[in-house]
Length: 319
Image (tube, helix red, strand yellow):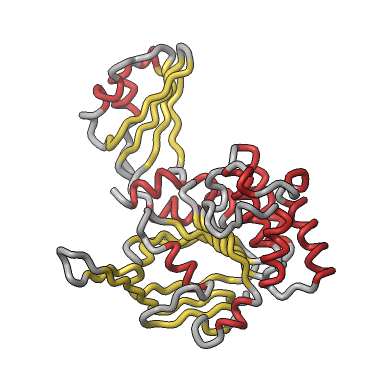
């Protein structure tokens, strides 16, 4: 399988100066290394400040590393930045990078010119991407009249404008309503089927689990876990999960189960008279009988063990 992204020992620091402290260095990336094969969605996950956006900005030639190397389609992002830019699209979140007084169409035509698209090609691509993101009806309205979700859709359109081979999506569904987010999640697999590669950052673990073929979790500028979503859930999770359905609500169930050996955490939700307990346990611990005894066998509708979700695995990694 061809490799699209190669990151090797990349280090990036930022220096800030304040009145109290003359000089302060912050390490954003600390000898970061990973590879991304062609034609997949690669999820880059991690907490705020972990280095995700810095990584994307370096790969998109917007920042340079202090040391190490990064290549996109074999081109060095520093020495051959022009070759990299021809092949990538960048989809950011928020409102920066758009021109409020221009219409959606005018924004995209401007960005098409920056991408050196001919006028005829630009007109067709602008129409195409506006239709893809569902903004055709609003194309002649000034962007300052767009909702936050509409602006995010325009960011997506901008990222697709030059029909790039590699697309960086930095939290692309943030600000979208549920329908808009679902439509974008449906768009991503269709882009992969066209042979495109996508590097995705998101805080929505279900989104990463649904879309990503491979995942890397970054913290303090270093990869701390990587693999397929299933690998992450099975290899890196520090918990097993038990789901218990009670026939009648037991208000103090979590407190009653806390002393049971092997139980780490109990989450409770109710739906009318039905109560669901999600019990995180030490891996390998068999607590079913003790849970049934504490809650009362007559009140237990079912007890089912399952693999952790990606979100549960992610949280357990950082605890």
